[in-house]
Length: 275
Length: 248
Image 1 (tube, helix red, strand yellow):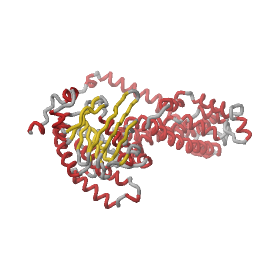
Image 2 (tube, chains in turn blue, cyan):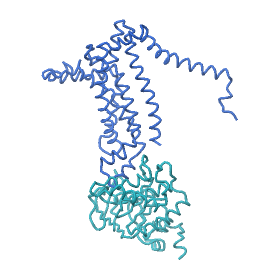
Image 3 (cartoon, each protein chain N blue to C red):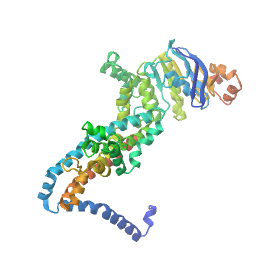
Image 4 (cartoon, one colour):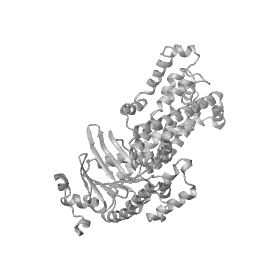
């Protein structure tokens, strides 16, 4: 017996396939291709010059700096939160679980504004910060804060789901066998969640690199100082420097494709962990 | 090594899981905690192990007060209902775990660990599976590995939570006999939880029958079977035909 869908008329199958491919091409392949066509529109030399411009280099550096601080922080926090929520019972557990999701529920622009309200010149801590010469808003610390806030839930959420499905049996077994808390964590818990953890880190990294809204609010767009890669794309574009804008955008696109491949691989690996 | 539980109470939320339970298990004795689900038998086992703490009452292991000590310090062997083998470790590493996590001063050398694990693998007759992962084993094999892992640390007492619950009837009968012989070789106090009346009466030296957080009766299989202390025990053991007692 053939499979049921094989009975559909040839014309139906072909139409559906073509429609699906056309949608894919129109909404995903075409824009991605356009980015690279535009980026190299003025030739390889122009592309290289744009990327090596001091302002672009400084945007890359700032993006990487924000990444280098926010991702490890969120990884540590995510691990701690997931460990606490899934392996222990305590008062306020549900509140913590809900709080972790807030950055997903709030528009990034609002998140940025919150930081301006708290740390900005007119904000709660603004006068104190100005007095002590510790600028947060329109400076690098603000960008790192905004990036960290927006990417906060990725690792924690991924790990909470994974660790909940794994339960606490193995930790209890380790404890009865005489393991202390560190041994329990590093020899039992961590190896069991390593692929899920990496998956969360990759998602967090991708989002941290691409974050626009929240960072845009707190950045002040000072070129060479508080511009991240996505903000730099916007500035170049607004100045009608299309080749430049797309050249920088192509960097982000390449990173996105790498992320996607990593994500697929880790999804496959962490589904083994769950089993 | 004896186990003594005195006046233990445990409440989960509003549910009273154990109501003033006292029980003594002597060295060399194999005790079954028998009861319907929700009777408190697993809770009692976990309190003996230190995985749960009693709200009141005391636990003595070998006549030393262990009420305040953690599961880590009690040196009990515990076999979990679903085995709880470490999924990312081989059978060998699972069994070696309890030895490897010891502080440096009491940790055996790598060679001694190797010898000890191989001995245990021989004991459970699974030497050829040493480098497999738990997911590659059958239920009966996992059960035996879990037991070997618990025995590796030379525990004072052995506690088993529904040790045969997840196995099919034939494997279950074989493992029962095997556990009985193993227990007799080890000279320790062992306690296993079961809801299977036949299993309790056939394997254990004494049976404690629990219902609704109380111990209804403690005695040899013969005593509880022939002289039930109350209506609950009588009813609970009514349709059981333990071969061991029938033959006598």
